[in-house]
Amino acid sequence: MVTDRRASWLKGVLDLLVLACLTGGESYGYEIARRLDEAGLGRIKGGTLYPVLNRLEESGLLEAEFRATERGPGRRYYRLTEEGRSALKTQGDAWAGFHHSVTRLLEQREDG
Amino acid sequence: MTDGTYFDRLVVLLRDREVPEDRIDELVRELTAYGEEAGADAAEEFGSVAELATQLSEREPTVTTGPGDGQLEPDDAAEAWVWTADAFKEQRLLDRFGGQGWEVDRLDRLGRFVCRRDLGHPMRWEYRRETLAHSGRSARSVQLAPEGWEQFGVWGPFTYYKRPGAVLDGPAARIDEPPAPPAKRVHFGKRLYAWLAVCVLAVASAFWSGVTVAGIPDGSTLAGACVGFAVAGLAVWLLGRSALRKQTSGRR
Image 1 (tube, one colour):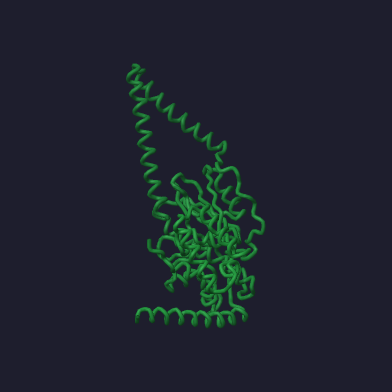
Image 2: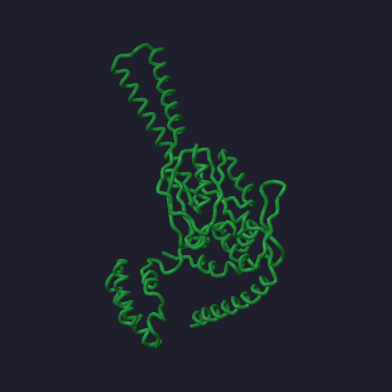
């Protein structure tokens, strides 16, 4: 049985990707999930996304505001805090370093 | 715990998890050698012996995924619970159990609600049921999606949607002390039985009307009519079940 590793990779980096989705401005849950899907990362279920959003909000990396809409009960909009931007920079750099190490090792294996 | 005790305990736990003996020998030899080479205490190097045994006894070495497209599922650490209710009661019960942190994963072939609840960070779930024709279902799902509603099942004319309470309430949707899974799994109310009784009476009266209009038949004709009704009922039930299977299997 071929095990799809993408889910476990995504699990480790989803918080970072959510932060990255908000660099251009505020957004809400469904829109964030849609952007992740369009980026080729697959459809993220609400049961996966919202715990991440909650954790990021509670740790001060995101702030959220509920706004009523003309139709429906309203939406909760998320935006990056300064702390969130800083974390995204730091963790983004860390991910890039990790990615580089993995890629270098895999290429070395292919060369061998 | 000394290294010897650690590995003895590991052997016991792996046996409890039905790992084959030759695999246990191999693992313990390998881990012992690794620990010696690393020069570290086994507990320090490998962590909790119980967690290590669990990881080593997993059939698949990595996180399993959904339908093979890399779709990320909610956290694996969850408890499961299955329940069912009649159409008159289910919306109220979905609200109640959603408030206790139960997320309906899908409807099974019997139309039961197959639920999970995150063990680490349970949160409230909201549900809605819409009466939709097949042709209008996709459009309605697209319409509801921006509000966080996600379709999880179809049963007859009903389409079911769910969304995390966090869509509106954020971290406040988290449940600090979720109650134990309810003991009662079947919720059929008096209205269902009343409705069934009305249906049975309607069928019986229609049958009796047919009999009296056509004249009282002899015993063999009456018996034949009863068998005909039973066969027709069975055929309808089989057709219905087959259609239902198509609907539920398509959602996985």
